[in-house]
Image (cartoon, rainbow, N blue to C red; front, side, top):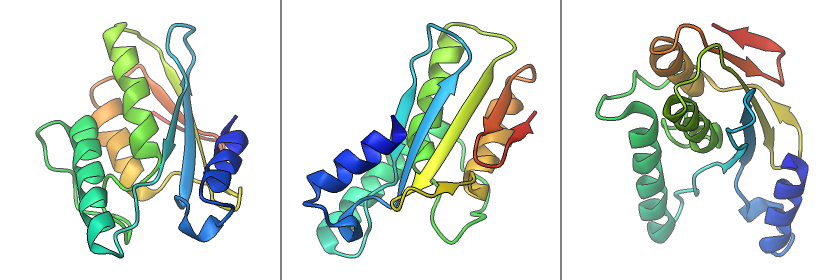
Length: 151
């Protein structure tokens, strides 16, 4: 499904992979009532119009991930909220919280625009440790690319 999203997105950009989002993600919890979520990286901010759009997208994602808190310092060259997983992961977390689930395993997979699997970035790991696992100690997050469980 993630590969289909990547290919359809590239097609929507006229086949020009250079203009497409740099990352795509798929996140799913181990509960049948929680729908899988997809994400794409925030727009690039090279031009004035996309700069404003990118800032709005990142701010929305920051609110979804961190609420009113400030995220910890960036661990990557890109800003918090840019990653595709910053779009898909908070939606799955919100569903699991709404359903008041325990012992949840959330699997996440990201690919770059070429289709290569990519491990979760350090900014997203901050969200996993400081917002998800700290609040829900019975949950686990599984990075499918690396095969690592975070608890």
